[in-house]
Length: 364
Ligand code: NAD
Image: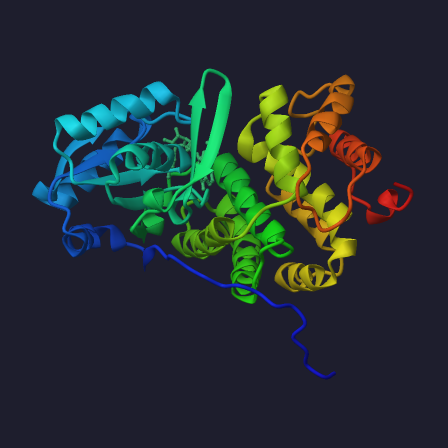
């Protein structure tokens, strides 16, 4: 077949320095020196205080103090307390040791102070390689983008993920796959991010079943973490579509858990969108070694024992009309044209948790 290159694209990057490998936390001091950070504030959740103490010990005098107030969704009060702590300690940098919530706090502080962030991720969320931040005031979560919050360095040490509970590993990993899957058909997509996405999905799909069967297996953890880096980079570089819009709408209107919602919706969003995007479908098929990526993602979810349906997440069938209407309210890019009926059909399938079927949308 004659090779072709049909799509013009723009590729521009502002990359985080990546230090990858089991045991790489030991390099923290060098990495802080590289950035000229001499008085960092180490951030963590209360649950990960012990890790922060270890980080501080490794960083030595360069890690001046610990702030262990990180919580889910970055409430503005927490962000303000973090900014105050950074100022009081005269911090010249932030070291965020933990998952998306801790990274979120670091980003909120950096937004105000422009302090450089060194990230030490311990989940598969991917926030350590994006310029996206989120802040919650009351019940309203606002997100934005700023180069100021993109971590300067990310240290991926898979030994720190060995304690990540299996259920969280599975949902966090599927959440990462969702970023890359939508990146494959992004409006502002490019061939470099498509390579990242394909390799990232492959690594996560291969690694996650081993992680869930043997959570202490360092090789499985490394492959999975490698996938998480690639998929996070895709999220940070290109826009998302229907799948993310539905997850945000479900999360916002029904207060559903973030990663679990992604895990449930992804196979159905793919069943709807993939018939419209043959190149993305081909890459996803290769990554998952399958002819039917939507079904393969559904089966991966069952293998990883994540919730299978919106019903399992506590959604009532009577909520689905409202969610479909909200999701259709503001227009957004999607590679396949949307109708209220098609979105409602997708939600019904996800509510029931049956095997996703692309042909179910043909009438919509
Ligand atoms: P999390 O950071 O909320 O962590 C969940 C819990 O697991 C916490 O109690 C944490 O202390 C604990 N934990 C984390 N790593 C652990 C480990 N290795 N061992 C034991 N316990 C560990 O979870 P998350 O899924 O990483 O982050 C979710 C948040 O991140 C959401 O608010 C989401 O919106 C955000 N997020 C942001 C971006 C972005 O680009 N801005 C990307 C992805 C996710």
